[in-house]
Amino acid sequence: MKTLLFILIAYLLGSIPTGLWIGKQFFKINLREHGSGNMGTTNTFRVLGVKAGLVVLAVDVLKGTLATLLPIWFGSSISPLMIGFFAILGHTFPIFAQFRGGKAVATSAGVLLGFAPSFLLYLAIIFVASLYLFSMISLSSVIAATAAILGIAIFPAIDFILTTYDPLFSLLILLIAAVIMVRHKENISRIKAKTENLVPWGLNLTKQQKK
Picture (cartoon, one colour):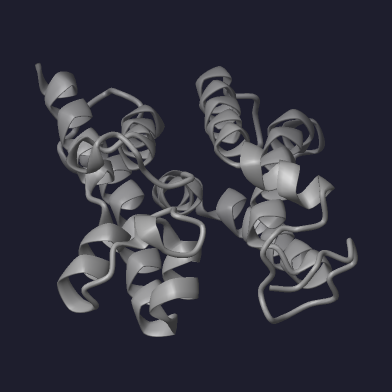
């Protein structure tokens, strides 16, 4: 019963459509009608500005972290990472926003912050380096998801960050990476067509057309 309660709380936490609510409440703007049409952190930065983007980023990360810490705080034997995954599902398919949510990156980072912060730091370095090279948050997210898969395969063998192979951790990392990649399918198509949105920073090595 406790596990089901944790799952429900995690899903509802993840379902909070932060960008959508902030846009409507404080800016009278529906994010789904502007920019990429997504209600996640990237489109919030693009449409509502830096301050709103930072708030959405912080809350979306916190959703994943709080969900992950629930079984730790309340002494449950259930894997914190598994509970955190339901927050990611909530963020991606939110009940409070017609099941049309974000792309899972910020909330996934929050889950790792609560469960494996060193692994998150490794992915953050990969993300920032990729962002500098390619100037695309979407591509950086996909590269970081790929790096996560490589990390769970390689790091335990060399005793770096991850000291042992954890089947459940590996499985859930694979699921998280899969969700991120699937949610960025349209972005990948635009990257191939060299029409993906850029951030005003970095080298744009793939020579996307700037917007």
